Every structure is written in C-alpha cells, then in structure tokens.
Image (cartoon, rainbow, N blue to C red):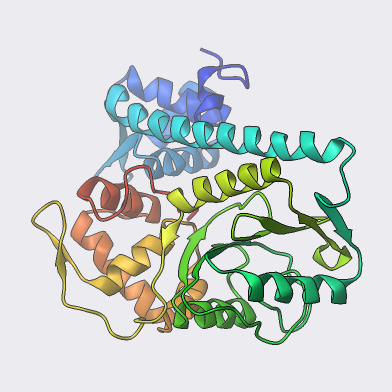
Length: 346
C-alpha cells in the first residue's frame, strides 16, 4: 500500500515512511531495522527514526537484542487510542471554528457605536481595562497568550499598568497559553491573581487573547500578533455570549494549576488504581501533559529543573514508560491524568 497524504495514515499524524514501516511489521514476523529498510525501500537511518516515532506512539514494540528487532502492536487497540485522541482534538477544533466564525461574521457587519468600540491608543486601552475591572461585580474571565505588550503587563495582557483594582468577592478565572507562560511577568501576574482568590489553568494554542467582564463587556486586541496596536471593546450581547462560550470550552479542557501551595505539598493520594502518586508529581504531570517544558514547569511550581526531571523519571519507572509521550498516555490510563490528556511533544 502506498501511504500518501490521501491515505488514512495522514489523518492520524503518521508520515508516509512511518506508515510503510508499520504496514510491513503488521504483516511480518519481528524484524531488525536493516530488514525493514530493505523491504520499504529506505535507508536504515530513516527507518530507525520512523521506528522510534512509532514506538513513542505505542504502535510498535522493540524486542531486546543487539540490534533490537521490532514488532507491531495489535492495530485495533494501539491505533484505536490514537484515533480516539484525534477525534477529540477534531471535535474541539470544530467548536472553536464555529465560535470564531460567529465572532468573524459579527465583526464583518456594520456595528452600532455602542456595541463595538475601537480603542486605538494603548493608554486608553489600559485605562478602559482598569475601569471595567473596577466596575465588575461578579466575574472576570481571562485568556492570555503571547505576544505580550512590552513592559510590566497588567492582568489583561492588553497594556502596561500598575496592578489594577477590583472588588473583593468577584470570581477571577484565567487560562494562560503554555507557550507564553515562561517569563517572570506572566508568573507574577498569575501569582497576584491566585493570591486574591483567582483560579488559574494552562492550555496550549489558545485561539484568541481576551478579557470578559461580568459577561457584559469584553476586550480583545485588534491584531492578535500586535497587542499594542489597540483593542476592541465589545458590548454586543450576541458576541459576548459567543466569547463566553469560547472561554468555557477552553476552561473545561485546560489543566488546573495551584500556585498558592507550590511549596506545601500534601502526602501521596490514592488514584483510581492502587498505585499512589504525590501531589508534586501530579502537578508536574499535569503541566507536562500540556506540552510545557521542564524549565517552565520548574518556574511555575517554584522548584528546580532537576527536581522536575527526577519526578518525571520516577513516574516513568513506576509506569514502565520510557518516553514522555508514553508517561503521559499511561498516566492517563491509570487515572493520574484525564483520558485524552497526552500532549507531550518530546
């Protein structure tokens, strides 16, 4: 079978060579990389790279020896879990597309001045943000992603300002993009919000930067790649509902993080199986599942990079997993992470 971009393999993220290698191993006895290379018409180095990729995806299994031989796993179970994750990702993407299209369709039509206002001056954006935050009485919802405005950022990521004021008792919920949550300013902003009762989560590839105030007003940048180039203040009920729905969908799938108790880790807790996992390892696995790197995990949890690596290594030993993808997948199967959580890119 010729694996091309039109074949089923492309739909689950396998390249053409990996597909050919898997097809060969499915129909043959365990074989070494040299034998597989001759069968699929590729170099040994290319085939060994493909085999490592397939092993990370739990599609092939190495058999001990020098050199090792390779055996395909049962396709129905091994490919089934991969397909399930792809279906979940596609379903989530469809939700985002529909919600973003509502925003696009609304923005494309002529708007009444009181429903959408363009704030072109960065100082005006900062002042408006502070005014809306101070006037909020129920909740503030926040999606933060890079690039950020240069300088001491406020909680919105829309402008430069001192720490803004808001009423006691309102609910603050923030989701930060894992790719942008690597600098001191972002961490300090999240710590301030958490210290005042804010809830904080991490997610990868946020679609938009956004702040919602009491579900009656919203701020979002005019240009997502140039946050200092101005913002939109939105008060249209229809558009606010669409933005709130987008936030809730992202919040539901984001990874919760506790920043207040980063150094006060409770005793190990029981999972759905008999194996125990302590709270620090749990927090590290939660962040690792979002695709966050060791340095960023260490910064978020206020621990050393070596401590992060030690806990990941111990989790791998407990799970019988060698790669980070395997650790995340098997942790999800054990109940240490939500099913479908693996997103490690290492």
